[in-house]
Length: 332
Image (cartoon, rainbow, N blue to C red):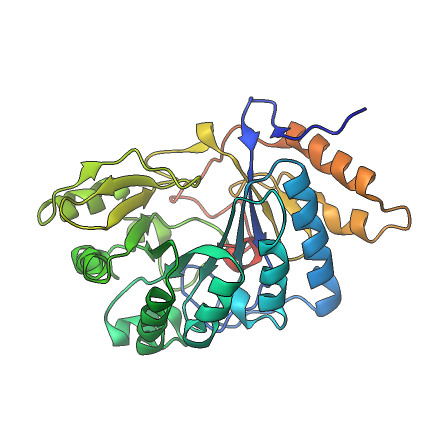
């Protein structure tokens, strides 16, 4: 039987976007992402860089056009830049992009550009240095700001800020964050907190601040015009007249985007996760490390996994999460 060149799930959605977490480790400890005292996976439980490349290549051969590298913080993994060079050279891949906390960009940005990384998503939840330290527990705001400047200078196609907004933590900064993006001529997306893992520092229901509330705050200061732009991800974009900035909203609670989902995630331990908000998955690491592993078996397992991709997630900020894995395990 001929191997199909597209991955199509049972709801007719074409999967052409793969997000790969290459490490669960991070040099930050963001309060909405992980516990302060994290236990990370031992090396033998995580995919090797060689295994990650095999999987990336296989997915591209199955019709994936876009790959996003995530973590943890992907740039702290030894050999990450070499891996990006390899993936960026894959024939048939239209776009290689990266999500980062920005801590390593001062030195890494020029190498990432050379590796054919097209776009960067940089996490930035506040412009207040003290609050940045509080939210990340270990991060330094100025290092990230300097990294953004270096990334701009080397000329990525697009740079986008990702801001997770929490009520009474940073919700009053959304206008300042957009003005910062305008001044830097970059994009920004506001993200409703994903209820993954048990957090101790805040009550998710009380901290929930919807995209509609953020948009209302922004419209007191900016004119937002609905945009038809689509980057292949879940952001709903608006433009701001007379600027180069787009404002996106990622709204897993208030505006569910599952009907158009084109994504799957490869976790650092080799699980192909079919949905961020469910545990439907297959163990690709076991297949890779089996004695009879070959390209045909691997492709067939990925094709068959489309049959268990769920229709939608069931996030509820008012309940303890049914998904106990933290975001650093899944990939941002």
